[in-house]
Image (cartoon, rainbow, N blue to C red):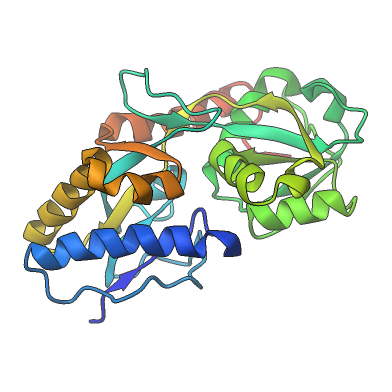
Length: 274
């Protein structure tokens, strides 16, 4: 079984060098610790939400909500990055968090969530936490148990949602705050085409993961290597390239809390993002 490594969650083409640098550092520590089957480079073509998490997945990053639903039992969490960007929080007792922003075109007349009622929502994936689960919970508070949007269009990814938003093919999208921060860093002129009109509740940060088939000894090596990258000064450049301030463990209960959001939305009469 060939081992794979990827960082598909934040993978703008302009970020390839930063992602590759992070893997280069991590790979070096894994080899130093005695691991043999370590991929030489990242797989950049992997989708953020694949059909399944492959058994040979040595290292990747996967959204927390599908880990609790469609990918349940397929991965082991290795720790969560602390992102030094607006919308992320390190003060929570449950570890580092992130959230999503409701984003509209800069020229949109909308200034609040109530202003987008009856509009077209651009959805990256029906199992996305930042694109579906978190905005569902936020909108449940004001939807009154009824459909909130005229229609929901699935786009396949946050960048695709933003592209379609610019083209006027939708009115609003829910974009992870880390994705939006990378857009501001790497595509500032593009980011200036959008405005934030609201935000979702917080969520545990998107974790680094390995396949459930990964041997326990290898899991320990991966965790130890990530902790070193998170704190040692020599790895500051690798962290800074991805706006990571540290890497911490996040309790399992924090991720199970994403299902609480799902249940709460249902109890408010808004079980689906519609």
